Every structure is written in structure tokens, then in C-alpha cells.
Length: 94
Image 1 (cartoon, rainbow, N blue to C red):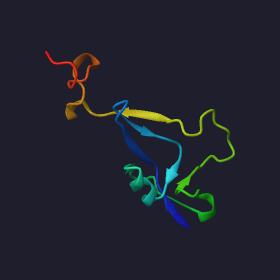
Image 2 (cartoon, helix red, strand yellow):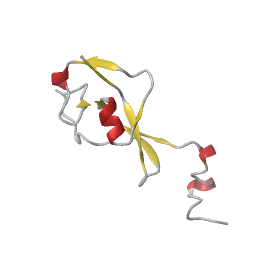
Image 3 (cartoon, rainbow, N blue to C red):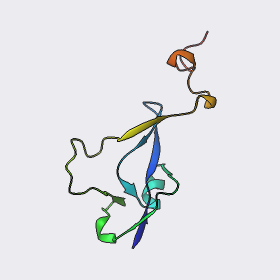
Image 4 (cartoon, rainbow, N blue to C red):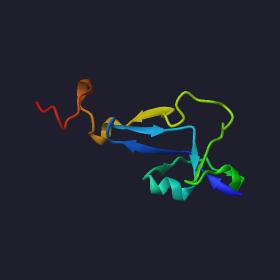
């Protein structure tokens, strides 16, 4: 058995964390600079993992876009990445 985890990674183009339905091995998650999401570990048969170290928990269901993000999560405002009115402080100074 191999342990896989759900993960998130930061998308710098959209300023959001991105997650997918896929799970990955710790080596795969590290290789894409992702972060393991707590309490998501699952032991699966090694034959269910692709060459990159990804596991699809829904392999029989066809998705419109297999690699598309399932959800996004904005960074906390306390990190200072976003100014009021949704504008980035990097580009809009008062």
C-alpha cells in the first residue's frame, strides 16, 4: 500500500490556493511545491497511482476537464496580499 494525500498549491497567476480531486504521494506534492492537507491520508494500491505519483479517487467518472481545479481558496487578508476593494497592494498604491 502507498499513502496519498490531498494537497493544495499556490497559483501565482490568480493569487489563490488551488486544489483538485486528485491525491498525490508526498514526493509528487513536494515536486510541485504543494502543501499536504491535514487529515487526508489514504492508503491505496500502488497500481492505482500514475507515473507522476498521482491518484484519482474517481477514475471511472469522466470529467469535462481532468486537470481543472476543483476549488480555490484566497489567502487570508492578514497576509497583506490584497488591499481593500479587491485590489492588490502591489499595483494600486494610494
